[in-house]
Length: 506
Image (cartoon, rainbow, N blue to C red; front, side):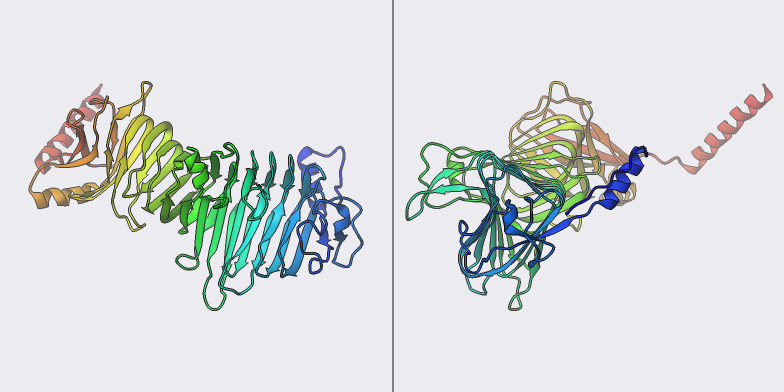
């Protein structure tokens, strides 16, 4: 079914290239009768050879369990509740996983692991979901059991037509009817090595809602997670979804959620709904590892009690993430490497700026170059840059810190970069009839900083003086570099000429 050709005695480079060219992937087609036996436990497990035909739906039954170079294909129209389980086959490997399901009015578990299992898609996972054309959305699930993981080396692609909900979460244990949740799987992980892509298709002339719900101990997308909507309100992203309204778990089985994204793109609204974990004092950590510049803008809703923390750990110096919170705020922001640009009218909690390559930008409400004020409860600055735009007199970025605005004990390399042109500043000075203009940049309750702790980066021709550490307001006084009068300029040139002439006589 698969072949890897080896050429001994050749260079390592040629060996790898030739081997890659000779890789052959087998296509395996799921052979169970899903119409007659749709139930999750009534048809064969995904990890077993007997449930796959080789080459086509009518091909011979596979002689071996799916492996790294096998592309798996599942296609069916199912009107009853259904589900697919990997099975107790040890760790499971395959190349691409392709599922195309037309669903009725019942939910579907698209992919489920078992306990203590690592599942690896060495290629991509591709889901095409078409629910029945009804008013209610169809619930679909990807479920991860205790101490289990799903790792997709390539992209995760979701193609939906119709009102759909996809939940990627830990598996649950249920009690007797009315089916309360009595147990939550622990240490679940879902990681995409490439991008997370969504394709929405029209139905009845509109893009019907897609609710993307996540609740695993670790959820990662090394590439970009794209939640760009085809129409307003058509995608909602729940980063820690509520498991059930009927929770009867003994003890505390809640957990923190760690979410790592190589970039978030789009305009879907983001929410947190897991009140069970919120009541237990849990947190959601959203870490960005961008290598490119990405932007998200939307509403953020958290009424659960969950603490939300944003962290920036760009994987390259060009990594940049813009987050425009049209509503809502978070509990803390930490920037270690890369640029994080923020907009919110609400407090963003505590701020930590700690890396030499860390950069905090203040975004406008929209991408058209607007200005805004960022609010924090406190701030600690170890290293890095705060970037601010000055658009006009009375129109500039600012930061308001309710409590302490402090430097760390080991602080060094603290910079404020002001984006203002000498030409524009000259016009404002002329209009005001003054030699300088003061701009209040940062207000704070207290600070341990003093003159000289912060360096200012300005454009050619602009002079900046910082002052006000003892007043609770850090102010930038901007003026222009003096331009020599024509007579003085000529005299300076004459002096230079005499100096060069004197040197020539030596």
